[in-house]
Length: 150
Image (cartoon, rainbow, N blue to C red; front, side, top):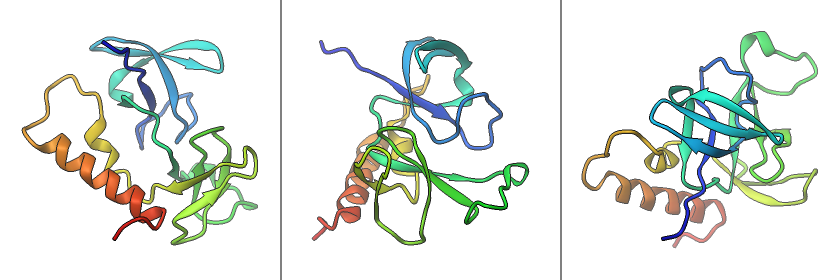
């Protein structure tokens, strides 16, 4: 049986020393906490603070700036985090994809995270059909972002 590699990021509205929007590799997962690889250092976090997925989403994470983080030089109330290198970039409204100037990769922008919520690794079992419907919605969102929808 193949080993599943889990990824985690901080849930919106949660205070944490982790960068919001960045995905971290999960080294260990228990019902109460997760041990994350953060820049080659292990960090224990309460599981309730994290969104945990069995894959690293290949989309830019959209992060809303907190009022206390307002930067006069920053443009807009949100920024995107590259899924490959975790670089932060301002976003333009309605752009379906964006190239990361740091790593050069092109990814779709996750304007909504609702599709990815179906993949979350929860302690309880989701209801019948929930995962299948959400997986189909996530695939449609990716296809539409890259102009592959019919």
